[in-house]
Length: 356
Image 1: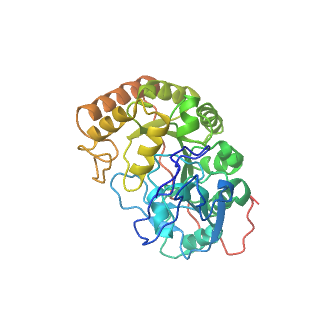
Image 2: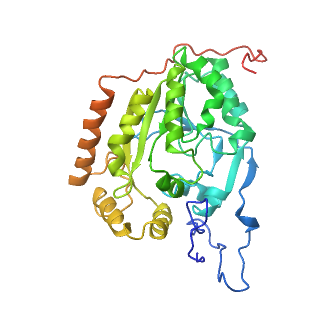
């Protein structure tokens, strides 16, 4: 899909990317002429309400530590150019480019579907991750409150839950998270990618600042909520030099553990990221692409289990050593608690929810 070639303010993508499942696509044909985007509308975000029949996803990947995930939203307004979840938008008939950030699917019946799943007689109370694909605290959550309502369901059932976010909005739900955590039922992962605000502003345009994420780690930790920090992704030539500073800031704020992944750009993500890179960091683009490819056998995409998250080769090993040394220095012997699945109950239907 062609476009005017310019970066879009406040967005990670700058154009629509062809959907591999569609025969026809739309876009800008000639930005100075009479042709206009079919659905421009000031580039505002659209919210589409859907009512799926299920909300739970079984996670079979050996690279991931959680058995189940759920996503109350599809697409993410945070607009991270590197986001691995972009291709999931193609299954809904949308582009992994601008559509992923501007067309947000709201699964308004998510809390009801969650409760239905937890009431199933065969459900054994395995931990569930919110959300795993798109951020549960992206801007639309402020109005929809689907994440909060799901946390109320978890509290009612005394069910273990973890979530990962880049947004300080998570502090709104401190009451629920601290109550769950007091019984070993909740943990939060904060994605901490950079403390360089100039980089964050263009790489993750609608997320909370790095400084605010550190404050979130501190506030949650003081409230008794165990926090894990994800330094992800580590991008060669952009944020790799920040690894020591990120680990130091996270540890001083009270995080209990930390891990990392390296950049990989599968499917349409590669086009989105390469375009973004040329627009914002043309002087470093060749180096970033070359070093990222070195991590993944000569290509920027990688789907091989055991390698896709950490990479391989000399450069991957140098990242691993750097991260290991500074994690040990700043985190010492801290441990991260396992969620307790023994307290899971099925309360009588109609029971008053104390958190409402």
